[in-house]
Image (tube, rainbow, N blue to C red; front, side, top):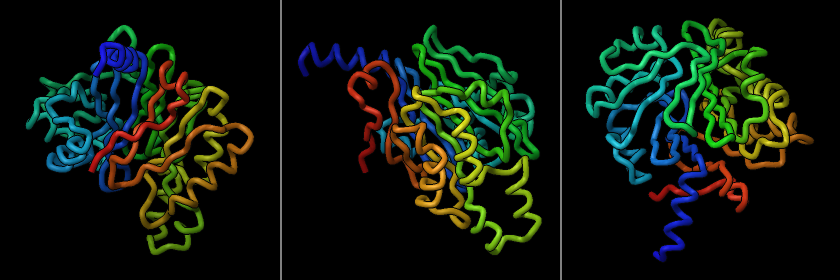
Length: 286
């Protein structure tokens, strides 16, 4: 590689932020954030073996992860945090209720409060924003890097004005589109479970996700990933078409679906990505 190409690679690394979903769904969730030599996981809902396998597809070892930030204590989001803490010594960042519910070793836990900026460098900060989700102190994460922002939010049955304010105009948004309303209510689940899923503290339907995104997407938003699709109560084409119906005159960027068996793709935001119109970068080799 020429010195010019090496310099260009270093500039891109310094000026861009990448988001890769290692897998998303009721059997486990984790998202890799990379920039400027930082590698941070949002959630760890996989076994140790699965985490090693999924990171390995990106030529990354678990001990190269700087920190794991947990949204809430439910097993598909935080169930593997203790494994990562014990096996690889990865520091866990979460709120007090999440740490207690997961029985984490508090000696290597960094507790945070809602709306406390978590600073990893002068150019990288992550803000936990509370979201309504039954039985958990759940948070969304707003990642700020070199003046641009990415939002990751999942497991919410409704939204707040505060969440809208923090997510408005983010360059990248990853958000759940958990179920299709007709499939849920005509499906085999017991009535009580259907009510919990569709309630304020449950999950967002495709319709709700579209309505919510219509309130936060603007001309700055370049990529959207729909996550946490129910394998029984949704289909990727239903989620995408329903969401795009609400964004028809607002959003012209890249939209993708993150399913359970990732990683499959990476989204990159930053000055280099903008200049090259490089909205989606494939980095996964199998």
